[in-house]
Each structure stands twice: as C-alpha cells, then as structure tokens.
Length: 81
Image (cartoon, rainbow, N blue to C red; front, top):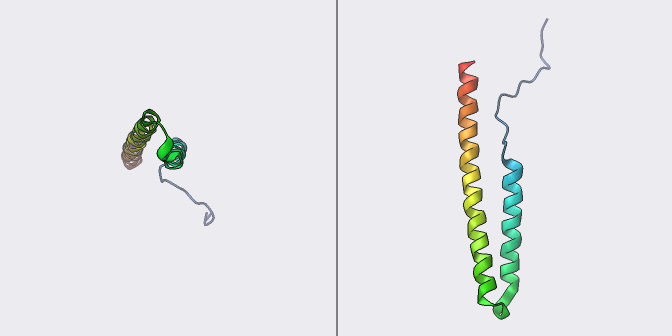
C-alpha cells in the first residue's frame, strides 16, 4: 500500500512565537507613544518609555535565542530517532 498523500512535517514548531509577537507589538506601541509625546512630554515619561522599549527589546532578543536553542534540541532529538 502506497501513502502518497501523507505529509510528515518534522520541522520544529516555534514555541515562543506568540510571545515574541506580543512583545514586539507592545514595543511598537511604546515606540509610537514615545514618538507621539512630542516636546511637551516630561523627561521622566520619556526616560521611562525609553527604558521600557530597551527592556522589551532585550527580552525579545532573549526569546529568539531561547527559541533557537529549542530548535537545536529538537533537531538533535529527531536525529537520534
């Protein structure tokens, strides 16, 4: 019996993709607020928004790195089987 219509996907699923997208959207929203503040915003607000943006950027980079580790581990497990 031949199974021509069976498709096996062995690519690892991006486990953290939804989190990365949410964090990216939050960072873009913060950047928009910062851009819309203009010159009348208090310096404390601007510094706070800049710090939030930097923190979100760092967390997003960490999530990407973690996803790469997950992908590498899954590839090793597939290779062992």
